[in-house]
Amino acid sequence: MLNEPIAPTIPADLAGAVLSIDLAALSANYKTLAAKAGKATCGAAVKGNAYGLGIGPVSQALWQAGCRHFFVARPKEGEELRALLPEAVIYVLDGLFPGQAEFYAKLDLRPALISIEEAREWVAFGRQYGRALPCSLHVDTGINRLGLTMEAFHALTLDKTMMRDLNVSLLMSHLACADDPGHPLNEQQLKRFRAVRAMLPDVPASLSNSSGIYLGKPYAHDLVRPGIALYGGNPVAGKKNPMKAVAILEGTVLQVRDVKKGETVGYSATWKAPRDSRIAILGAGYKDGVPRHLSSRAKDGPAQVSINGKRCPIIGRISMDMMAADVTALKPATVAKGTRAEIFGNRISIDEAAGWAGTISYELLTRLGSRYARVYS
Image (cartoon, rainbow, N blue to C red):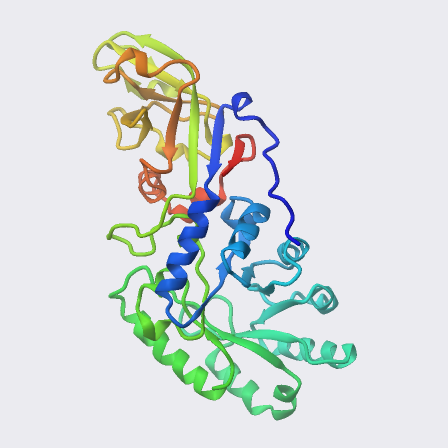
């Protein structure tokens, strides 16, 4: 039985910043990705506290949407997820931590084995445990991060005794350049993965992340593992985002100030008013996960917030607790103390805001602070 979503610990009217998480949009994104994957099963990457949005509410919403295969990075994440979803299939992407096979086995966590040494330890524990425990084999096909080398994988498959006691439930690799459809490494990795799969043809295979799903049917195989697209990130760079916004971060207006022409705003006086101006001070800063790189230079922009559907430039330096926006162009009645300004969400996409900050949507989500109110809907 599923647990109820965790209620926000800070009421929205007591927080300077509010993070709204649209679980209906999350479920819709999952179904969009599942449909795009065709006959392949659609899993979900929920590592990093579900990309910063809350492993409990997010994983339960995904389960209700039909997801049964989940991917975490660390075994402790797997422990937390297992308590929430007793029947889920859970893979641990960072492999088998040394001496921790019993921890994985008791929680029915499946390590994505990344070396022959890990395979040996998993097999040895399984023999002691009394059964061949399920696992994934993660083969590196070109990203050069985690994974068995092609040579090591080939050597492992030739060890008949080892393979007899290795219960491989998934064969996987990871694309390095899926967000760039024209990159030649995509086809190279697909070719290598096909060669890998030919050695274990009866084992389900998984290659595609969010962007990989949009590379086409040849990349889907048996199981896809979307992450950022579930949470609203664009899996097809340079094209219209097919995903719905899931996370909406807003700062609350603490004060509206009149600033005369020539006066400066914020630390280091980086912004000087080009005219008599009206400035909204928002209760959101880098403690709340708003990147300091969204701070404006001497001139306006390009970073903006949206207030009542109108974009307003972020001005001055973003500080720990506050940031400022130029609201001179808005009618005075439309912005006041208590008004909320969208930093990213439905009107300003997370990818757009991340681009202004010189980062990516993954980092923007996972670095969100803990001080704002979380509102799940």
